[in-house]
View 1 (tube, rainbow, N blue to C red):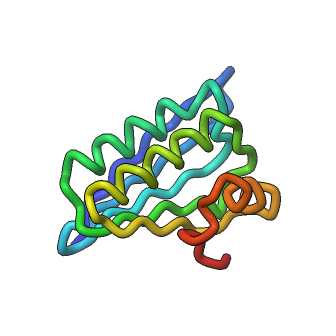
View 2: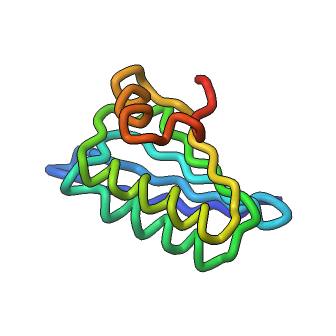
Length: 117
């Protein structure tokens, strides 16, 4: 059984970012990010990750396959998630996104946590 929470950020009635949070059996968490993860939206993603860590998961997966833009703020949020996972001893897996997003993740040292699309 899974629980789901969807949060969206809109600008002028256009969805810019959607974050889908799921808890799968045995406290495994999954977060799917859809849209632009930039200066104006990364706080929404950060809040979803904070809720995830509060639930004390045993594993976390972040699906970036539908991210269309990734800014420094989004990268920082992912780096903080990686650090938090490492400190807590929780596996963090990132589902690879578009080529330009995947390239950035590799450049900042998150390549080991990437799954191929």
